[in-house]
Length: 191
Image 1 (cartoon, helix red, strand yellow):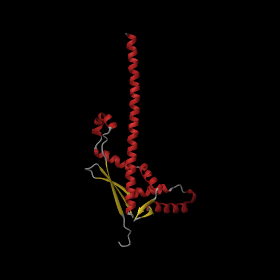
Image 2: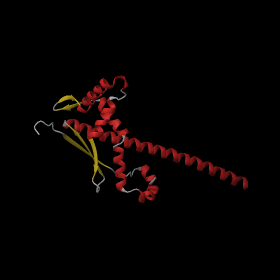
Image 3: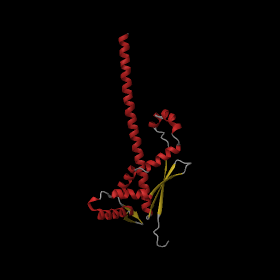
């Protein structure tokens, strides 16, 4: 135990809430109809699956690669997840040469897949993201980046859904207005 490097774990908890904003209120009638088919447990499971997606892992890896320096122990230092991934990539490049198609991004995403875990207490709407690292600052930093990227992805998705809904309702309004104008013209012709 004296020779083993300590491993630290940082945990971020994310509260998953039902959408009660204006766009959600427009669809509240439909969501009430869908309620029997969507349980809270299923919603949480879906959110955990989103947290495990390659898209989110790629966004986290991009941010970590773009800014590989953290403040560790009062000084600025390179993150181990980046330096170790770079060493592994260099070994693969030496071994495979020009046939290597792997990038630093692939190795960082692989480390994230291994070092980040997600859990949920079945009686709550909270998802815990746990990150393990040999540096407590790095574990904390990765957990914060993961939660921030998840928030940004969720916000972007909500905005896209609201935009799509607004476009759909605008098209429906135009179609309905055209049908109403046509009916009024027919009524005028009949009169």
